[in-house]
Image 1: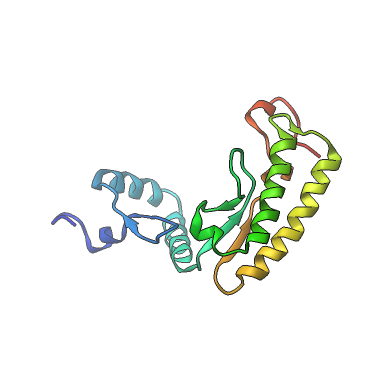
Image 2: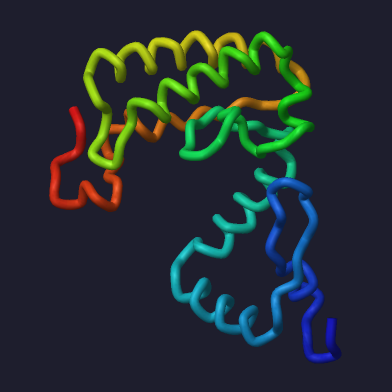
Length: 161
């Protein structure tokens, strides 16, 4: 904090969602951000409340498929994988492979595969929540079946139904 900064300036910073650590923001960026936020009624208050909510939430893992991954749990890595049994990791890996083999830039190869994948997602989510209950929160992002999803190569096509 410089002599010119008010005590409130000390509170400004980016919060790393994984570690909860505050990352400093340079004074000029803080000034520009403050000017912008004060021009929108309630914006600063909303962001402060949202920051407090994020900082106080329990650790979170996300179940979500993605290209070129083996296990569809985020954050990727040993700590996340260690939360679940080898059997559940095997099921998650098979579900990820079903996605990788059947979801192309143009969408699902068939509606039957899409439905099968979605049904497996429901079962896997329930099992994952049961296994990690009380230790971490689970978020689920099934972007390949989200009706609003548009891949960059699908911009000229309507959302999937």
